[in-house]
Length: 154
Image (cartoon, rainbow, N blue to C red):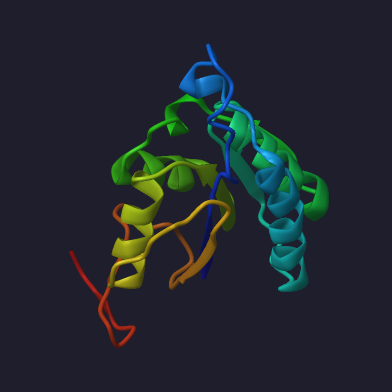
């Protein structure tokens, strides 16, 4: 089995004038929530082989909390900023690990989580979703799971 963990960046600060979207920092709530959610994931025993993050400041800062808590090196990838479902899936499958954690943005994360869950999923700020995927290797396309948890081929 391979495992994909999706994390949406923590709550960002919209109140800093003149700051680009890419350089928007976390707000107080985001700085509080990121380490709490990282600790909650660590309690599950999940330790990803690879931790990939968007280069946006809010995602990188969130990912740094997960990297420190989980003891996993952080890798930033510009292509995860605003990534679509195919781009997110390509990053996960190319990472080479059996367990990959991706910190990125919506709408791509919610869309990928929805495909994998087989139902609508809203990845709110600092949400964590874990998807065990049957098989020894990453499939070329994300598996589609129906409402009963049955994987269907594409």
